[in-house]
Amino acid sequence: MGEHVIALNKKAKFNYEILETWEAGIELYGPEIKSIRNHEANIAEAFILIRKKEAFLINANIKKYDYANFVKGIDPLRTRKLLLHKKEINKILKRVMLEKLTIVPLRLYLKGNYAKLEIGLGRGKKNHDKRETIKKRDTERKEMRKYKY
Image (cartoon, rainbow, N blue to C red):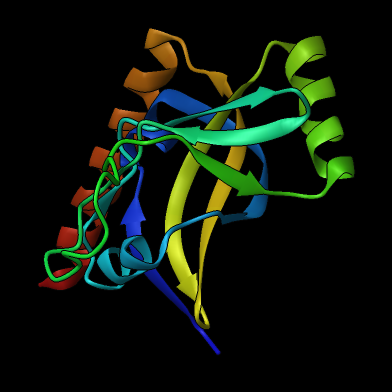
């Protein structure tokens, strides 16, 4: 029972220093899981909010499934509830409040028959940190090119 990655949030690792990660389930309708299995989901612009001790995924784009004509009115950008334990939500909320961190979706994947979302606590990077990341990535590419030939 392996993991099958559907969507990655590449901007998250570039814009944030990820400190801790969690695995969360997503509350979905039937046609939405079919769209996810068809790789028609995007979490690049998504973010996570905690309201009234519940976590929500906002602005994640899961395309409407083409063959589900019987289900009307499912918005591709609707707010979806994340399935986390109360202890996990309290721990995340406490760290967000105390340390001024951000909750970021990192990747959407299938684990068995279930869609899971990996979320992380991130601290925003400054511009000089981003430049360092770019420089490190470029030097790694140059090293790989040397060994390729």
